[in-house]
Length: 174
Image (cartoon, rainbow, N blue to C red):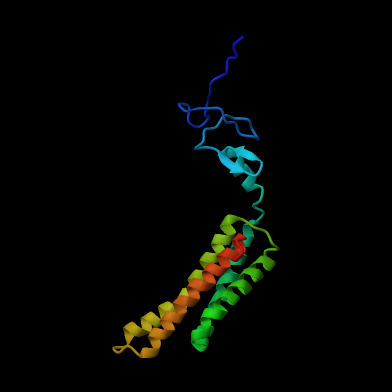
């Protein structure tokens, strides 16, 4: 009495023999196509379909979040000239405020593109004072010492507020 096993080949790589199946759609998948989930291995198509059900953002949320985040980030970047060293401590707070304001306005709807759009708005708006400072340096023949410190702290603000907004909206908790 011999037991014959049916040869299975990966649905995405027809040359690769496998014994693994997706636990949702039952398609044969190889180790390169398998994604480990808490309930077992799934194919990348099932994972993509599952992730799309979590994207709840409306079309107008992108524009609203871009404008609001850009405006708040620009306001925060204007305070850097007065805060100087304390920017290191207050920029993450500003990032949390911006992220929570955006989250409240879009009513906690989410999507990956929404987080990226908001982060882009924050980065672009916080770069405006840096560009203005650089243009003033190029326009004047001498480099005042205070301008360098303002440029450094504006850069620190840009980095800290942008990363804080992204991580806060993307769901990664520090």
